[in-house]
Image (tube, rainbow, N blue to C red; front, side, top):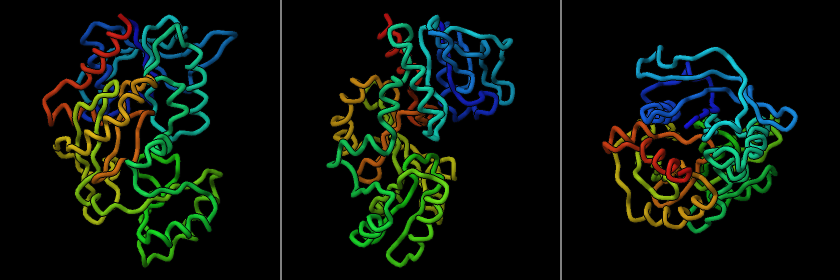
Length: 311
């Protein structure tokens, strides 16, 4: 097959952690042809969806891991699979790319389905499952946020469309910074904020469960660094081997069929204690860590699903 990766610059990735690199490596092993482009080179041209990029081959040599051909323009309708893999932020640049890729429906298989990626931001899709999530409020209005904090005392405040742990604040019962943080966030963004009841279980880790075509295949635990609330590996969280609990299975059973129907082949959900906190569909991570901990070929399972859908 002909496979295109829409992603951030591949030369900068960590080959021992990056999930897009691992997906490309597995595709190459299976004999597929690879093409790479960044989202700023995606275009609509008089009825065609095109991209300017380079033929790609990969190898597991950090710093010399991506061999790229000459820059050329391609018609994306000529490809079998297109991976939507650039990292958030989930801004209008990201949203526009999903609109353009959505026009390839029936011509190329885009993973994950861009219509539902656009309509299922990580912190909003979970609102469809209130029995699985901690108490949550989404608002820009300060008085609404203050009222939530008054009810729950110890809370987490963060940007609704943030990623990688950026801008995440814990405000405990003694904190006096809510108004200042609200001024800070609303001063540079028109977006709402999300505030959730703080879950003490985060000290034991924030579990990333990976689902392939709606089915859970394993999990890794991300433990915050000492003195840190955030468990994201971008900010020093430590990955650990962990299994799936009965509660994890219950959560996956309740959301799995929905994800499958939405064409979300590769999804990473975040679970703290007994609560689902995020459903990551834009550019989930965790493949390589899970492969090392559990000794399974996660990328292979993802490609098995895609190849079966296209067979």
